[in-house]
Image (cartoon, rainbow over all chains, first blue to last red; front, top):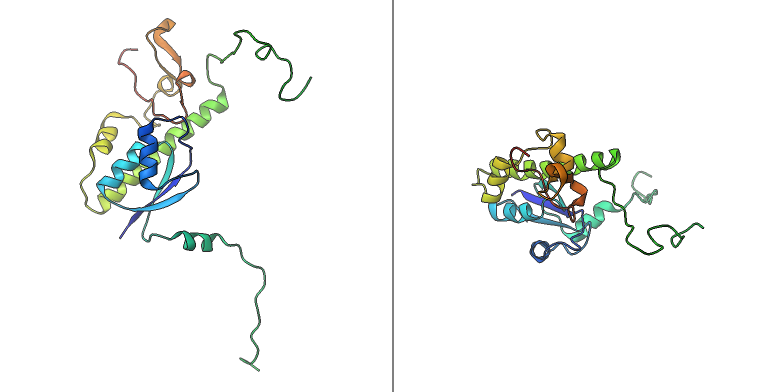
Length: 87
Length: 111
């Protein structure tokens, strides 16, 4: 099931209450926040209201906050050797 | 002499707060970039709905019907907008409040 990945790029400070209401409804509380919403006409209509503020892409899977954080984690630069496998 | 609170003409009081009458070249470039970003969002939503064979939404359909894309727009419409109070009926688009976060693409025909 496809999802819209919606990221808030521009702040809604000083914009009409209606625009801020749409952002609240989508759960976009601050800049660079990302939410996943199912692809359907109702979500499309919501995105149309805030199209100047967000970056949108279509993805197959919705990620949780924890999963997104895990994907941002940098490579630690080391690995732990396990004894007793080959020797 | 330097710094945030230096004495300049606008800060010395009075009504001197100058906004240039036209956009600079980098401002125009960023404006085109923002227009393209909105075009991309529209394209993404449209493709996603079509892929699911879902019916479209009124707002999307009207936008596609009425609004030109960045490539289709005339430079005149990208950087200026209609204003009945201006000489020659045009003013820079940067005079529009929140102009970097609102869509202002079409103007009255003939102006």
